[in-house]
Image (cartoon, rainbow, N blue to C red; front, top):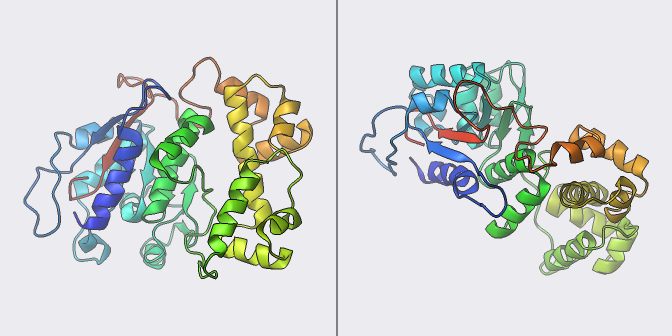
Length: 340
């Protein structure tokens, strides 16, 4: 394993493998799977694990963290046994996930045909060329296509893993986990992989403080003009620097923050829908329902019901597969010819 492969593999294990009993109990049951017996590497690192493809096949979620550099460069094929295991897991109903170059494994197994997918921006063109049946998104952080999810490289893999926790266990749990990891709680998948961060020195601190202030005042009528005045900039300058730094317009970012706030309130309080809408800054209950349904996929009321009564597997998570003795929260990480 090369250094970048260790990083992405570690992301999945940190997010899913470290139990958080005060947030959700049970947590995920993670198994690190290797394709074959561990062999001394020619370079880089090796990882020892007792789990193999038999464990991957029966997982409820399979995460492919990366593929070896030789596979990317066309110097070596992916293991046929690994490809067959991926197909078998998907056929049995597993949620299939790739981080960074792991998309090449899902693509080789035919699991991305006819779907939208992404990978690290340095490899999107090659992914599209080698697998023309995939609709490659070359600029997004991650793509959630229901039962198949793919992410760009490095920190985008962390975004996708936290997105999965958000889907499975709710916005509050994902937010608390992100705080413990000292990372952004929620970056939407449509955010750009690469944005121009060349803002003048000192401006990013002002921008960050303004964003923190806005996130703490979502119940107020925030506009670009209001935030620009807070940052001490003209509206035009603020808009340009905000988008250059975050990859989102200020109003798009605000909407994401308001929806995230609404999700947390629906999960953790019994506030009426009208009050949830007001507290999250979305105004009327009708406005909340419209935006919530469009972006989350269900109405606020249905969302609240789906996460009530101590439920751990939320409305958007795959239901547990029968016959494997699982709880619906098992997850495996696999990586191709090298151990994951």
